[in-house]
Image (cartoon, rainbow, N blue to C red):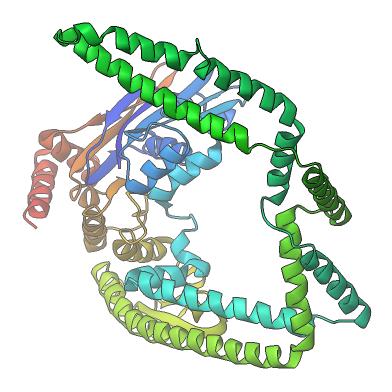
Length: 547
C-alpha cells in the first residue's frame, strides 16, 4: 500500500504532502478542481512516461515522491539490486527540458525497474482504459489463480518439459544422417584419444615432476646444508640439547622446571622435523631416463591438445561423444524404437495431467461463473450473463486449455468477448465486479478507480461504493468520485479544491473529519449545503456505517 506522497510543482499543485491509511479513500471536489491529479502522480510512480507539460507553469522542475510498504517479492527484488529492503521510497523528478530521473530509496534506477517494483502491485482503472481483465491472453492465468492451481500447474509444466525433451532427443536421432566417411573419422578420433590413456590432472603432475627433477642438484645441495646446520657438532639440535642439560641442576625451581619442559618439547619437535627432511634427502635421486620419459609424455600431450585445440578434459569428453555417435549409428533402429516408446509414454503422461487440469478448470469455471453473476446482480446488472469459454488447443506447458471470458448484457444476446460487448457505465460496473474477485488473487495492493461511476446514480451508485469497500478489505482503494453515495462507503475522505487569482491556479487536497465529510457529501449531492441536504447526507452516511 501507499503510505504517503509528496508532490511539488506538478500540473496545478504547488506543494502537497498527504498520508494514507489502509482501506477505501474517496476523493471528491468540483469539476476542474484537479481530483485526478494525485492519481496521475501515482501513475508516474508506476512507470508512466513524463513530459514537460506536467511541470507547473512558472516552475523549472516537478517532483513526485511516495513511500510504499514492502512485500516479500519487492524485498527480494530490492536485495538483488543491492538496495535497502527495509523501505520503498519511489521518486520521479522531471524538468521543462524533458529530462527525467527515477530513484528508489534515493538511488537512481531504470524506468523498467520502477514498473517491476511498483506497477505490478498498483491497478489504475478509469472508465475508458483497457484493463488486463479485458485481454483474453490473461484469462487462463486468472482462472488458474482463482482455482489455486499452483501445484497442478507445476506438475503440468514438469510433465510437458519431460515430453519436449523426449521429443527433442527422438528427433535428433531420427534427423541425423550418417556417412561412412564421417563414421571413419569419428572412430579414428575416438581410438586416438582413448589409446592416449589421458588422465585428468596429468599435465600438471608431469610439469611438477619435471620442475623438481630439473632442479635436483640445487635442491640436494640446499637440503644437505640445512640438515647439516641442524645436526652437526655445533648445530641447532646439539646446542639445544646442551642448553636443556644446563638446567638439570636447578630444575627443582618451579619456573625453571617449566621452561626446561618447554625447551624439551621444542627439541623433540625439531628432531622430528630434522629426521623427516633427512629421510627425504636420502630418498632423492636423479633419474635421467625418467626425466626424458616425462618430457616425451608432456610433449605428446601438448601435441595432441594442439591437434584438436582442446583441453585434456575436453578431449576425454570428445572421445565419449564420438563413442555415443558411433553407437547411435550402429544401433540406430534399436535406439529409435526405444526413444519412440519413451516419447509415447511421456506424451501420455503429459496428456493425463492436462486432462486432470482441464477437469479442475471446468469445475472452477462453473464456480467462478456463479460468483461473478452474483457480483453483477449486486451492481444492478440483472440481465448480464457471464460465461467462461474453455476450448482445447495444442498441448503446452499450461495444458491444452484456452480460456476466454464472455459476457451478454441484454436478454437474448449470445455471450461475446468482454471488450466487444460492454461499454461506458456497464463496462465500469462489469470491471468492478470482476475486480472484487480477482484483485486479491493478482497480488494487487492498491486499486485506483478514476471516475468510473460517471453516468450512474441511485441504487447503482450505492452498489458501486459497496463493491469498492469490499475490495478494500484485501487491497487499498482510491476512488475519484462525484457521487455522495459512493463516497459514503469510504473509510477516508479527501476534498480536492482549486484556488485562483489573477495569475495562478492552485489545487489543494485536505483530509476531512466526519463533520466536514457530511458537508462535502451534501454539497456534491445537491450542489449546496442546506439543512435538508445535510440531513440527507447524514442519513446516508449513518446508513452505510451500520452495514
